[in-house]
Length: 137
Image (cartoon, rainbow, N blue to C red; front, side):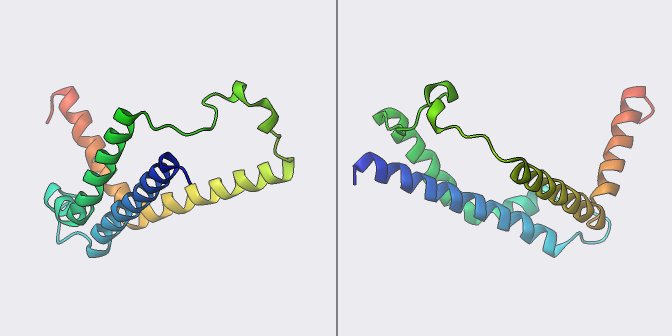
């Protein structure tokens, strides 16, 4: 296996781990919930929950910088026009299933935000922004 390919796979794996660590940090904040009337997401809570992901962020950033300096790139074409033989249209049934899945995921995320109190937070922020613009706040 080529060293550039190993480099790219390592960087991809670290990116996936970083995404998982950031998602777990956000879930950790949601699991603890809001104490009393304070906001769910504050700077202090975010810093405390996302601190374990900091070494991964530094590693991914360092690998990305090293890859850019060394000129490490994937072998796949950058534009769709460069590889027309690889493109095959999706069947309609598969398109419909993908759309239905994405719609269901969006509805679940909206419901989770409503149940989590996110709708109330967005409403308060909108009210504050509007009253500040009008000059009442």
